[in-house]
Length: 159
Image (cartoon, rainbow, N blue to C red; front, side, top):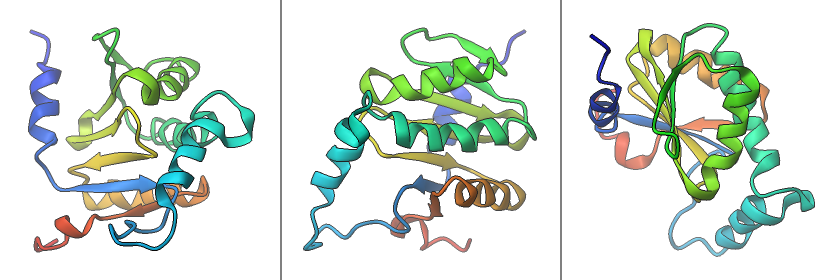
């Protein structure tokens, strides 16, 4: 019997999470800067490329390198199919498209963890990582020019 991946995702979405982001920490709501203008620039106008491509390439670097260490089971919402270890080009294509109209869910099954990319966001979210997975993702994010941080609402736990 095939595993119910949708139930796994629902369960993991309730777990503690970290953010893989272009910024080193969450921007405060009352920040005097222009976060939303910068976010829009990265989502739509960066380097006159199709939306999201440069930032999504950085995210793709993290995922592809992580896939060297762990099997992935991936769901790209418009297709609504789960694919084990999709071809690297397919995974990056889904990732690039996921900001426009869909969500991408990556189950790191052997680690009981989830990574999501959601429509309109400039970050990935990592749910329920083990200490080892968190360290590895942090190294891969840094190598890709990204940051890994825990949202303030998550730091009240004991971890």
